[in-house]
Image (cartoon, rainbow, N blue to C red; front, side):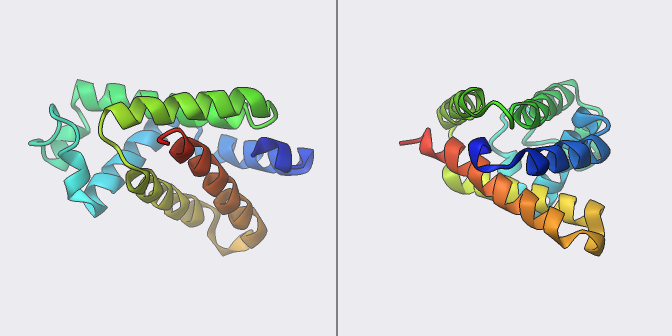
Length: 150
């Protein structure tokens, strides 16, 4: 995946990521909350979170811990864009781990769609090429994660 990105594209993704995710945990928290709001059934995948309201989630230590891990995984993905072998290993391990928790390829696709929506809102209409780059890159990332399921 990353090997198909030019150095300029990698730089564009990393630069825009640093603006989008000044605090990766906060971005991840917003991502997961939005995921749960748009897909309430996904919250039931988390035994300790399934009966909490959205307001309760925002201050729940287990939720915050998970959001921190999601933020770290996103940041690590961006950090490894210029290291394709390491990135593939990282994403494959992520897919294997989440398969054990019962997540499916569809779950990851929905998460990717929510992330793309958030990126699109942050970028706005001013940089359509950058948004296209994010979309294609996330598609590639998700394909590696999903391939780990097979």
